[in-house]
Length: 351
Image 1 (cartoon, helix red, strand yellow):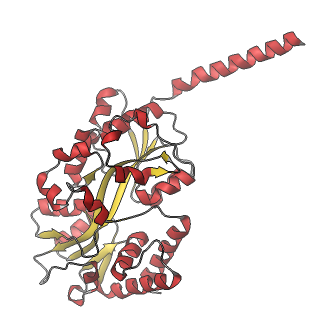
Image 2 (cartoon, rainbow, N blue to C red; image 1 turned 60 degrees about the vertical axis):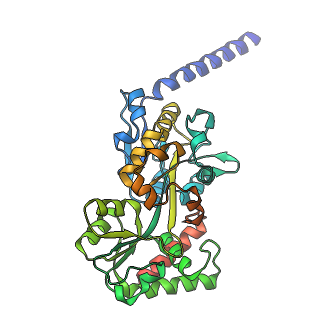
Image 3 (cartoon, rainbow, N blue to C red; image 1 turned 90 degrees about the horizontal axis):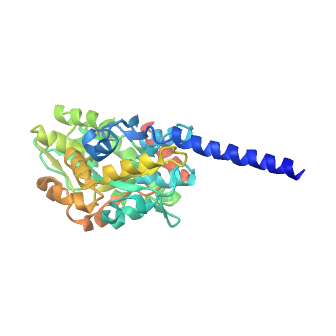
C-alpha cells in the first residue's frame, strides 16, 4: 500500500512539474493591450521595441471607457489595459487587474504622488498613471464677439446654435454640477434633478453632441461650432497647429480633469513583458513624446523638462499645484455610473 501511495505521489509530483515547465513556454511570447486609438505609436514605447525586437504589441482599440470595461468583463484576454481613473475602482472590484510589484517599475519614484494615489486601492497599487489632461471650452475667437470665461457661458444665448458638448453622461453631469456649485459625487435627489434641468436648459444652444475628437476638430475648423465643450488638450493643439484662431479656456469653475494609466490583467500570461512595456512607456523620453504629440500632462516628473515649453506654460503643466485646482473625475460606483447614464439619456430625449 505504501509503495502504491509513493508511486501515486511520484506521478503527481511529476505531472505538476511538467505542467509548471510547460507554462512559461506559452507565456511571454506576445503582448495584448486594450488601448485607446492613437497610443500605439512606436515612439511611445521605443525601449520595449529595443528590448524585444521580435515582439510587436497587439492592440485592441476602444473609443470609450465603457466599451473597454465591457470587453474586459466579457472575458477578452489582454495583458495590459489603459482606462481612465473613473473606471479604475471598477476594474479592481471586478478582479480584472492585479496588484503591481512597484519594485519592478524603474521610474516609479518619479511619478507625481497625487496622481499615483488615484491608482491605489485598499493599500495596494493597481494602476500606473501615465497621462493626464483637461476637459475645457475650446473657442473660435475669430467667430465670437465675446470670449467666454465660465462653463456657465455655454448657456449664453449669443452662442445659440454654435455650441457642442461631449456625448458623455458623466462629463455633462459633472460640468453642470460645477456650474451649480454642487458636488456631483454626493448630490442629493433634489440636486440631481437640478442638474438634469440645467442640462435640459442647455439644449437650445446646442448644434450637436460630439463623440470623437476628430469630429469636434472638424466642426470647429469648419466654423459650425464656436464653443466646444469638454474639448481635450489635443483638440486645441491640432487646431492651433493648423493656424485656426482658437483659445483654450481656464473656466472660473475650473477645468475638468482626467488621468489615465495602465493596469496588468489578473489573468495575464505575459506578466514579464507587461512590466517591460510599463517601464518603456514610463521612460521620460516616451512620456515626453506622448506629451508633445497630444499636449497632455505627464505622470513622470522627469519627463517635464522634455515637453514643449509653450504648451507647458499654456496648460500650467509645470505647476503640480494646478492639479488641486482641477475638477478631476473620481472612481464611480456602479450606481453612480447608472445614474449619470440615465440622466443623460433622459436629457438627450428631452424628458
